[in-house]
Image (cartoon, rainbow, N blue to C red; front, top):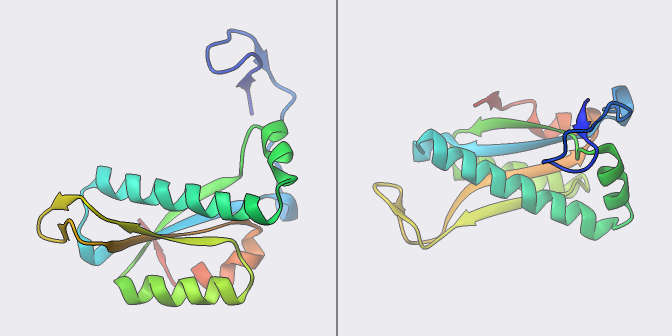
Length: 146
């Protein structure tokens, strides 16, 4: 993975950073609700919120891991999946918590986009991870890519 050594605006490249593979690779999943028929931009923003909140939960549990992510230049791979409805998100959330996985249910509120968003709180996405693929598989295997 090539990444600018001096930051995003640097012209110097640092090719020494390598994305972990195999058991060391970290993955995060966002499960978004298909029944809300969100436009692609809305779906992407809801998935992004879920990823960030789940990562923050992960770092709350183990703050020393932030240095690892900064050194790698990544917090792992991210995959967006779809669930049928709120019930799917709630079941996956409960299962992830029972397995001790970092997770966050994102609830959108205050936004109006008919018909599903009238300003009331709406659970739109669930973020799970980062964790190994093996740890995440029992929760995410029943969902499809968005």
